[in-house]
Length: 218
Image 1 (cartoon, rainbow, N blue to C red):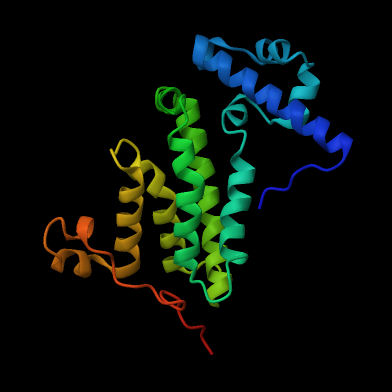
Image 2 (spheres, one colour):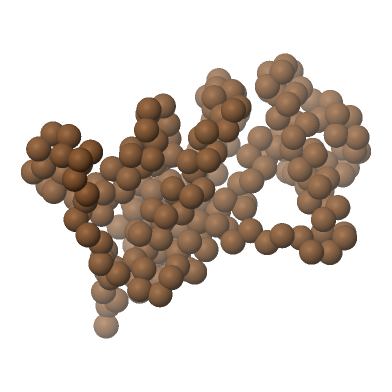
């Protein structure tokens, strides 16, 4: 999970990085992405452009400043899950803990609008999610004993990563997230066989500690 910097130098670097990212997002939201230069951001954060590039590879990376941390937490959710907990249950728990608070951030709508309205950011986000898909798919495959490029593991990773976008805009994001995970966990036939609205009043089938764990190949 996220490591808190313990040394003075590490704390200073983390604070500088955060100040740059905060300044960039503020300027992007105020002026528009294309109207803000790297120099504008460096000046607003009171750092040199050289310092800025020590922390970020470019303008797009400034918007997705927690990209690497998010990926690290995703992999940790799989690899460091509790003993007996299934991969899917661990990822469900992570999604509910990590994504729902972000969706409730007061500037979440502005941020999403910025990304959706800026082609460069949309392209960067797609590349970012593709990389996350590969990393998460590999982690899942490793845990379950499959080949690292197993298509089912890659597909599962892709589905999991799409859940925040699918739940966005729903009046009850938690319920939407849970319902999507139920679909992935129990399959369409289970949901299709249920009366309309049943999931809102009755709990899903109990998940055992070993549920959804694919047996390792001999």
